Length: 168
Image 1: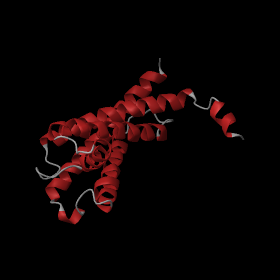
Image 2 (image 1 turned 90 degrees about the horizontal axis):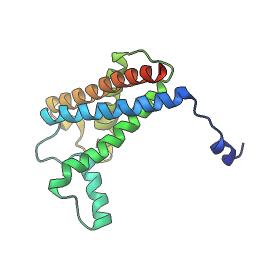
Image 3 (image 1 turned 180 degrees about the vertical axis):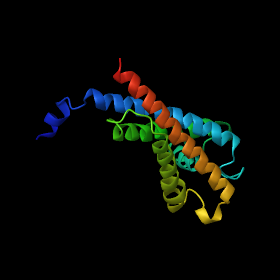
């Protein structure tokens, strides 16, 4: 099959569209809840910059010649968090496209695996976070809790929106 034929073919079923929309909305809601949790529970040392800010500082320096201003760091961090959360939610929603029922434990699994694959493995390997053994257990627990809340919220919203879209 030619690439143009594949791209012109209408391959998205209503189930796929519903799954992606519900997953994206779930991921956005989950990210908002995670951000609120992180506002109240410390997930890093006060003076420590997040991985998102480190990446954006590097990008900003390459584009503008200077890092992100301290006043704009909170906004810049969310400009990374929300698209990532929406993307994770979309993938999650697609993976559950034939399963409308609410399964809170699936959200717990989503949140904990997201935490593990970022904060416990990939970010330390890229040098964007400390080695997990150098991070206090309480800080790690707060980060894990925030991610689990992300996953649960993503699942709650995904299931709700998916059912509403299916029944309209």
